[in-house]
Length: 307
Image 1 (cartoon, helix red, strand yellow):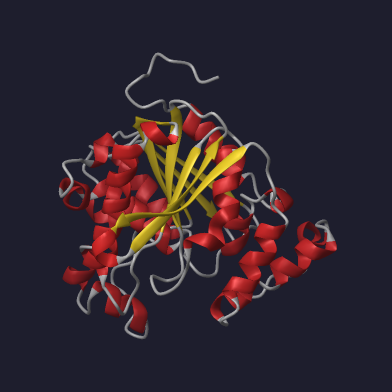
Image 2 (cartoon, rainbow, N blue to C red):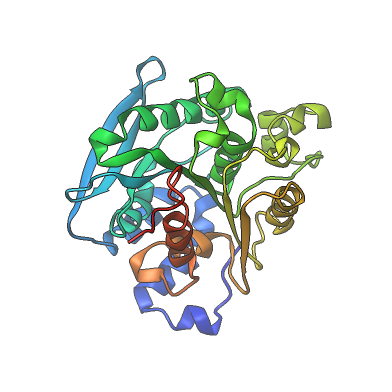
């Protein structure tokens, strides 16, 4: 959906306004150009990048790591990008990795297989493998293996949330959702059954019947043993209904779980994500809320205060 020329938009520098107005090109085949422009404006110092690390040789999948210089026992975030489960590349999201690393977090951004090459089982297996790899290698990356968060935007939010709610996926690697330090969901798809009959992609990814679709719906699995959750949502999101975040929040609250919901008036789907970048951090307090959540949840060390 095109961005409206609101006062908030007009407050950005001209180049950033162009990027925001280009956001509809996500669906028009020009994603690489859009993200290259955004990444070019978002430079940070004292960050170490480890690129093209293969975590799944069988499927040719790799990940990139962004770490603070000289990191030691830092919190770790595995970020899953969106793209309607059909598109996206980890290199496009360097601005997410550098933003988190600049604030003391080891950020891991993996690729995963897409539809129609795979359906739900395929990309969820990839996501679980990436988290398991991260957990096993956290120390050598400067992170803490007991302080690993999963985070995702849009379709990536669905992936991250399903890892945090359905024990099937991490269970294949000897882990469980409670082993995660937390879930950070940005405009994720959490409660979408029944899938509209005119949505060919979601029907292909999740199945044609509500019973099949519920298998990929995070809210279906909330039972009181999930990690802490932060759910961020713009109220002007025209791609993922805010009701998704509200539904997952209510389900976790009903189980007495540690969950937080933050809604941002006037913020749309892309702006919520782009606000993680340095040049566009005025669009929404996304980064500040993410960092406050991470630093308030040192996993398995509740008596330790974050510095």
